[in-house]
Picture 1 (cartoon, one colour):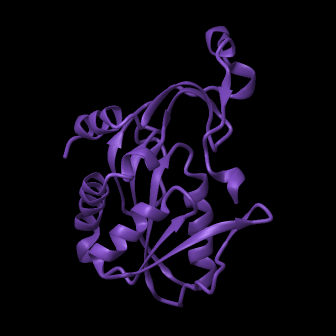
Picture 2 (cartoon, rainbow, N blue to C red; picture 1 turned 90 degrees about the horizontal axis):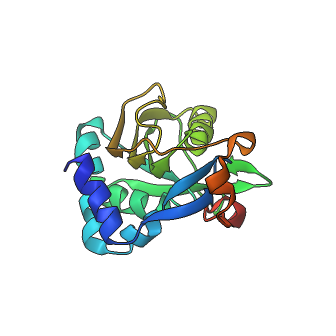
Picture 3 (cartoon, rainbow, N blue to C red; picture 1 turned 60 degrees about the vertical axis):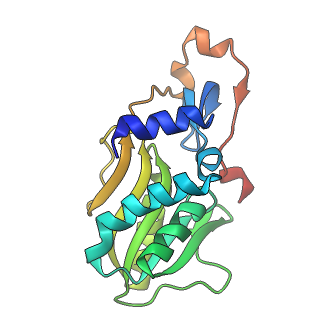
Amino acid sequence: MTSEKVIEIFKETGALLEGHFILTSGYHSPHYFQCAKVLQYPEYNIMFSKAIADYFRNDKIDVVISPAVGGIVLGTEVGRLLNSRTIFAERKNGIMTLRRGFELLKDENVLICEDVVTTGGSVFEIIKLIRKYGSILKGVGFIIDRSNGKVHFNTKQFSLAKFDVVKYSENEIPEYLLNIPVTKPGSRTLI
């Protein structure tokens, strides 16, 4: 599966949005990947999850962990395909944590699954959790690499598509983008 094919699927399903968006990272962008819109179709969820699972198949993954909310659907399917326990981390008082009775065990092989990576903030937070519990990070799998390969997690990592989306900090937003109403579609405020 090529990066171009993945982007084409996002466009066909209306999951690549255009406008003025505030990303979870805080950056502003004229593009937003709404993965939930594409993952609602089982054929694409299975296709994307299979590619990630196949890439990590020989890594003896014990548990797949995803950040809530975006990575949960993908991570659950990847875990099913790898026959691995599947959990998610979520923020409590702004801090990524394990809740709902989820746990990571010492020396378990862990794969992180995420939908979109821009700065990698949520993934880096989960890496800290994995280390805190004494588990072993085996890799990070995700659908869209918005950093176009610039974010590195110092482990095996795999993305289905690299996409260098323009993003601006709060004080660098161009005039044309300032004239478009702002949307903040990310899930961070839900948690």
